[in-house]
Length: 233
Image 1: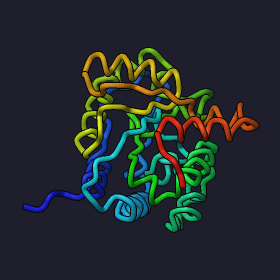
Image 2 (image 1 turned 120 degrees about the vertical axis):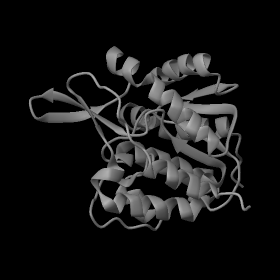
Image 3 (image 1 turned 135 degrees about the horizontal axis):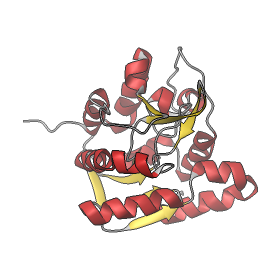
Image 4 (image 1 turned 45 degrees about the horizontal axis):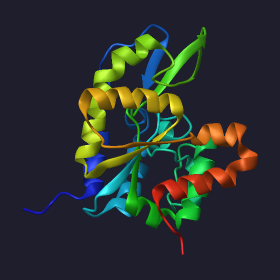
């Protein structure tokens, strides 16, 4: 029996991704794979392009998808601009720009490019769907899973289950890279509970870097590359 490719396992995970749990009032979840048929198409093209193998990869954990990045493309930290310009996959039905995507792809370029980076790493989130919060009647903005104690409590079991499913794709659990300090606090608690990873390495979140530390961006790119233990020759 032939072993299932990494790409097929990710696509299968995304095809069956659904959150049916409760949410506090004023929050909703967006599932890009249900909302736009093209998302499933471009996501599948991406994983077939970079993950058609059985190689074990290292895990980078974000928070939850932004509605202009993975909330549209289905690919973590990848807006439609980077999807087309770097990955060569055009999305016809949407055009998005996400600040986190800018940093991530600048870092990927420094690492050695998308092919090399995605051969070594898999990125996803404990809550792999976009979360929106109603800030004024009818106005919905991006939210993080940890923004509200009730939201965190209601989604924790789902997140632990999601992390286990990500690991089962074929990930190295000896060290995990967590983006964002608040995110890391929550992942550490989940890790104590479920014993998922041996070691957690925390890196500043790409959105924080782009928004508040853009002048020192190169320092943060270097920090990421150093943490990954990679020398681009």
